[in-house]
Length: 218
Image (cartoon, rainbow, N blue to C red; front, side, top):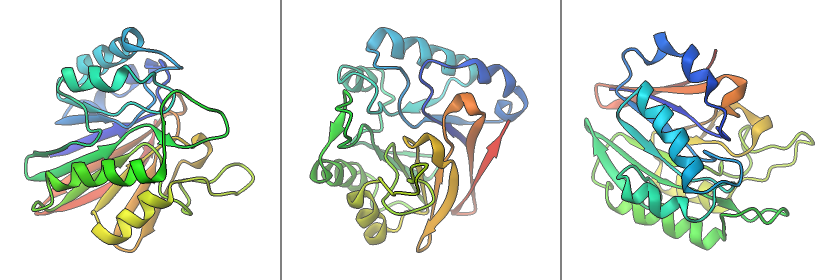
């Protein structure tokens, strides 16, 4: 199975038209959060519809810049990963949307305890499955994927602790636009593709019971 993931779309879907070759043999697109710019269901639907035209099989998270109403709408669409686990082609996929608390009081923020509980809830639905793909809009704390321009890490300690405990094969994150990067926490590969308008995306391929994950740019 080939998975392509990107996030921090913020309504800017233009790069989908440039991904024809990349998406030609893609089995699943995962949108890792921030579909909109402070938008609700109407804006989120526009983005999801565009993504579905590129690949009918889609899973998604709402991010911190999506209004809270987007979370239940993604559930109704049957594509939400927030607190959910799903097995596709032998791969266990689970996730957590929104973000940890920021100084900016964005629409969808969660405490560290809520992030831990949401990840746990999704994981429990796929815990018997390997390989495991974790999708968390907020990157884990203190990696190459969660640093501001100043170098300060602002990711989630709860997400990092969860990774250290569960050891998913891959963690896809986003949220921090200036930290498009690949890193590791123990055996777990952690990736942040940066904002979609910047051309970053992640390719995850399931091969013989393990996941190969890489960050690429258009």
